Length: 82
Image 1: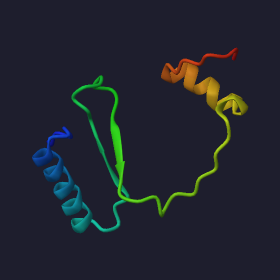
Image 2 (image 1 turned 60 degrees about the vertical axis):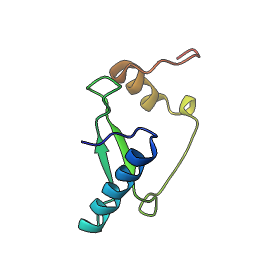
Image 3 (image 1 turned 90 degrees about the vertical axis):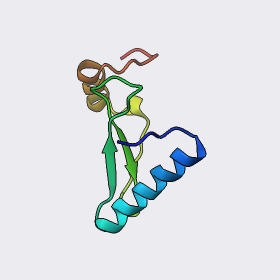
């Protein structure tokens, strides 16, 4: 367990740990961790690089199926008519 506080010593330790993880498992794309400041059901992702990602972006309003799933099943709030 590490803290991602912005205190210099803690921040440096977090970077050293991430570097060690990357050295131990070079084919690892990232790590997931639970934040102590957000609800337990949420988690955060830290990616080592974006080299392996292929991105295709569209406005969410233009993706009705994905948007409906996010609103109905994942508690997303939108500020427009769905």
